Image (cartoon, rainbow, N blue to C red; front, side):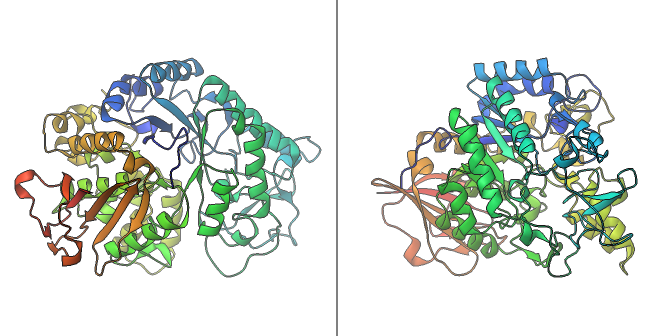
Length: 546
């Protein structure tokens, strides 16, 4: 069914500001650095830039612990710099999307510091409770980062709730004043010209009750009392009625452990315009992200088919600031790094929905080599490492397991060229180390190579922009055996047929999929390498069918 709204033809590029471009040589990316790369982003072919948090923050969780929603962290610049970014982006037809983090704040936010006084008017901005008895939290919930979801505050002589780290206390959305504060934040940035928000863990904000959770999960126990709760649906609909319906904007939800039924409701009831589901990222998990099955493309294919046919619109992604690099996850970074990157690009950019490209994905950036988790900048990796230390794992196994959840992999500096610090900074010391492969994987060298991953992305984005089938067309899965991925996009009388091989082996295309009169529009292979009837390792092809 045709869906035409302001965001349906957009491609969104995620910027992790701390790692994108450093303009002043301090080893940290900043807003002026982003401005300096706007022409590159326009030339790439994207339409919107989603910025991970740039608010004032102690950076315990790299900005997802906000201390002041109305100030820019000095590492990144000033509010005047941000205003200039909006203007410069607008000149190029680019729009800016902010990251909205309101399930929790930092414990350094003035609201929380005031709330520690039981008589303060801010006390009810957070969820404070007495323990069941001395030394026992109010309930048995566990944090998403593992460990108890409650911390005792000796000044208050009560416990406060935090679904994430103890430095990230949860806001209380039963309090009308908290709802009004969030709406004030939304209007502040929308009035500046921001195009919308990616809303962090937005389906966890409203806690229906504080009853004990079921099971013994080390992380997320108790989520049945808040995940996609009825109050959460009502809260998001209120934001739409009060704020979003009055602006030309887009609302994107990060929705952990969502199901198709709730996904439909978020979309159909104007609560969200699109959302991220985690099934694609977790398609090869075994019980926990720490433990994975050997990846098979059929796992990813089956999840994609479910969501593409289950809801009307998706936020499609294969990597972001919280996930490993997609080549390491779904491809082969050793034997077929370029082929993997191109095949995954075809998958991401030809599905129904809004595609998201994460910085560096367009040049085929990969994970860091294995590192000591104690040296990680990622709080969740360090916490998992401390738990693993108490278990009977060898050092090598502990490193391997902790690195599976290490978010530093996706947060290393953007690789612009083969100069000092990959052209990210003039400083040799950067806040995270540059990936050692930057000499070969960088924007400058790939710009000059017609067969590069970067130039393939540009060609694919151009094809998507001029072909309405990929923007508005229905998704029609083709059921196949094995690990082949096959589907059609259909719009009016036009059809596009996509075949993808995400394995390191040649695949013979089933006879019934070889269509007479099919015209090849784009292949991830060079022209001389393409063979009808076969898919080479990590080959992806797009056909026009009359």
